Every structure is written in structure tokens, then in C-alpha cells.
Image (cartoon, rainbow, N blue to C red; front, side, top):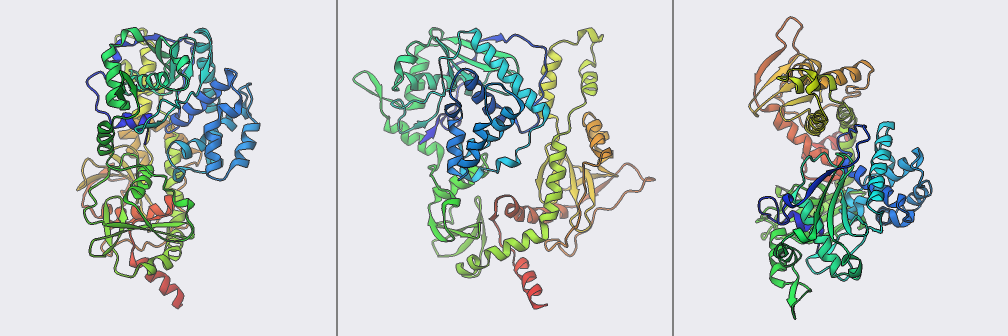
Length: 569
């Protein structure tokens, strides 16, 4: 039913964790003096790449080391492309190997989450700095594991140990007496989720077909080559009653003849209630064009894979769900007990007034019209957003901030690197796009006017008012000074393009007011009130789902009317 990580996400742990983080001893990996700063949004893919390349370096056949992404490639129909990538991979850790491995890991998501989240691996970008960082992380991990006796096994699954509650999951590495899990993260401290994950792997292993290997395990450990830290605990230091609690309450084993086995049905029922829905194998890509009846769990599975933080609402007006697919575009329709149709967007519903066949027949035309009108606009917004995500923090500025209050620079120590890692994790541009708006951070934003393509910067701590600045440069220099040098550099070399070929907006209300320009003689910002930009932006954000996911979440009659007007010309 669940993977190990999914099960952990539904467990409420006591302070410090079921397997207390305080039991683990922190140790330092030999410091090579190289500081690694991973770009925002790359840690998950880098972690997979480091894991698989470390297995390869430890003597595992490359087809076995990359078995999960190869399976993912077959699930999305790209086995031939994946095979080409695997052929370019070898133990040398040369540039071609790392690029190929990194892109191959892009197929992993199809297996571990959903094929609906798969994006073409050719679009995965990797530069020289990231290549170098991956190489160093693999070398650190390999060197450490060699120093503790070498890898005896990797990617071990737990057939025979799974039950109805936990049905998938695999551990990273075994050495002669230790079970290791690899983490590539900026976390300074050990998390209780990580310690519970190790305990579950160990207990699953003891009851799996590989139980002989796990009976030799005496320690559990976390390796983080990014922070140069390991965390280790002797199994004898973990209270037996805590391991029993994990076995009975988390994995949900039953006790028969004094043996842990099978599934405790009461724990299974609790697990189902905590999840609130069953994950299914629903994949809209596997359907031909048509209108289908699907389950509520099918819809929740799809929506949860798109938005992992989403929680299932009550759906009190939904009796059943229709799935529409036409020419690669999707639409989900709620059917009430009174047979009223509504377009679904998570838990929100928007009433539909025409027969279902109307929406199916017009789905491609509707979506193509939206893309025709707004694709150049969205291309521009996402180009700006993606460029902003690459802007680094100014180390000079961060160093100055770090040293404030200190007597002299001699107090600058390795703790500055920890501070810098923390700042890089939270202080970079967010680059989230929703409607007209690009988030720089929680308070600072760019508003891109769809009428004329102009870009306006503003700061707001609420939805009712905001301070609008002369330019993005003015706002960033004042409110985000550590990012200003990198931003200015991109600006100077022309890598922050503004909108081109801006289209007329069908969703802007007639009383919408453009953001006024601020002249050089004025103050650097002006205070404005009103929520008009947010209401219009919200409408565009719903249409944006077509651009990002080929998904219609609300049907605007204005779109079809614009098509009709064009056809009448």
C-alpha cells in the first residue's frame, strides 16, 4: 500500500523521534576543503545520481545500479533513449558519464511517484559546476564507505518482509556490519524521519529473504557527503521496546506464535484512515481519448502527484467523477447526487452548464486557443523565473552579515560555511510563477503586465496593499541586497528577457488598472491599495495549468467566444 517514505509521512513521532536522534553520534567525514553549493531545486536529482554512481563505483553492474530509472524509462516509453544514456556511463566519473547519469535519473520519478510527473530528460540542465559537484560528492561517499570496509550490498529490497501496509522501499548501502542511508541535503541536524527510516529498513530486512545479511548488522548510519557528516548508532543502544513499537505500530506486523509476521488489520485500518485515500495506479497517459468513469481515489492519486502538499478535502458535493481526455488534454468533472456537473480543481468545483459531450468535443480547441494567446507570455515568465533561480547569494555580503557583532575576521570559522549553506537554502530567489506574478520570496514579487509586457516590482505583507518600486533592480537592491550583484550581472549580459509578442488578455476585467510607472524624480516606491491584480492573476493561474499540465481546472466561456469571433471573420 505504502512506500517506506509514504508511511513515515503519516506517522506522528514524539519529540526527538521514535528512534531518538540523540542516540546517534555525529562524526565528520575527512574535509577536502571544497565547498559545494547546489543550485536550488537540484538536491533530489543530485542525491539519486550520487547514490547510483556510488553503487557503480562500488562494483555494481551499471544496469543494476540504475535499475530504477531504467524501469521508469520503460514506463514512459523511452527505453531506447535510456539505453543510449546507460551506454555512455562508466566508472571513470568523466563529464559524459555524469551528464548521462544525471539525465537518466530523471526517469526515477515515474517509478517512485508517478509517470504524470515525468518531464523529458533532454530538458534537464547540468552545467560544469554541477558536474564537478556530483563528482566530488560521489568521491566523498565512495572514499568514506571504502574506509569502513567497503560496500557489501546496495539497493536491497525486502521481499518477504513487506506486508499490506509497507509494500515498497529499498535501502541504499550495506557494509559488513552497518546499514547506511545516503542523504544529500543542507540539513545541519539529524531528522527523526531519517532515523525512523533506518529502523524500518532494518526490521524489514530481518524478515525478508535477505534476513541472513541483516542479522550481521550491528549499526545504523546516515551519510551526508554535502555537509561532510555521518550519524551512527549501535543497535544495542536503541531500546528494544522502541524497535518493537516501530515493528508493531509503524510497519504494522502482527504477532503469531511469538513471531512478528503479516499485517495487523487494526493498524492497517488506522493507516488507511490517516492516508484518507488509497493510492492507485491511475495514469491519464495510459488512456485513449474518451470520457471515463474513475474513482475518487484515482483523482486524488493524480492530484497528489502534481501537488504533494495537497490534502484531500471532503468532496461533499461529489458523488462520482468523470475523466475527459482529448488530444492530450485532461479535464476532471465532479458529478453530484443531483447529476450536476462541475469542473474539478483539487477540492474546488466550478459548475458546468452544458452537456458533458460539449466539453469533450471542444477540449482541444479550448486548450489550443489558451496556448495561442498566452504561451509566449508564460514562456517569458518561466524564462525569467528560471534565470532568477540561478542567481547566487553574494558571499561578500553574507560574510559581512555573518561578521556583524564579531570583533575581527579571525573569528570566521567553518561555521560560516554552515551559515552559508543555510542562507542558500532559504535566501535564494524562489521563482514560483502563478498568474501574472513571479515570487522573489514571500514578500517580494514581480508583476508582469500581460497587456503591455511591462514588469513591475512590489513588496507586500498582505493582500490589500503593496509598495510598488521604480524597477525590479530598485526593489532587489533595497530588499534583497545579497542577491543584487548576481541579479545585476544577469541584467547586464541580457539574460533576463522581458515579454515579446504580448497577446491581448481575455481575462482582464474592464476596470483593471495597470500599475503606474514611477519617474526618476519620484520616491523609490509608492504605496498602492486594492486587490484587483490578484483576482485577475488568479484567473490566469487556472489557465496556466493547461500550459504546465495540459489540465483544464475551470472553463471560461470567453475563450470559446473568442474562437467563435475568429471563425466568423
